[in-house]
Image 1 (spheres, helix red, strand yellow):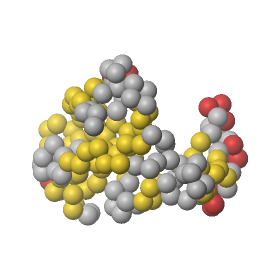
Image 2 (cartoon, one colour):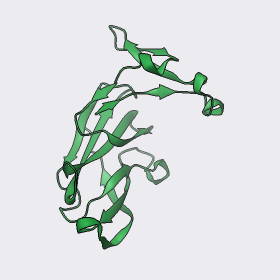
Image 3 (cartoon, helix red, strand yellow):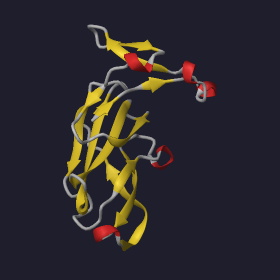
Image 4 (cartoon, one colour):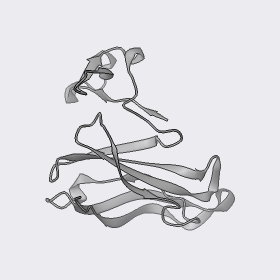
Length: 158
């Protein structure tokens, strides 16, 4: 339910002490960073919504997309999932709703882990492919199409 944001130089990913975490915001909403994870604060809090989030920067439009999903009914993999897409000018927010899809792909499908592979985006940043995993069937039975899935999408700029 709480998303924290960290950063690290590419060559230092395996060094815990190299990581920095958002720990505060200035009045102008610029982040302050700390090497101490215990000092970190959530950049976004959404009860029941932040399971395995994915963020991608769309250079063509200069925005970050944050994708996440949830089981439609808590603890029930047999009743579908919901998709949530947010956007922001910065990776630390503020975030605005782009798309909500109740029963994403239908009640019986149960997709999860939405992603926007950047290699599958058009240069203008408004069209691409959503990749996601799914599906399992009722009571854990495979539904016959458990696999990686894709669907096209287009962002409409307001």
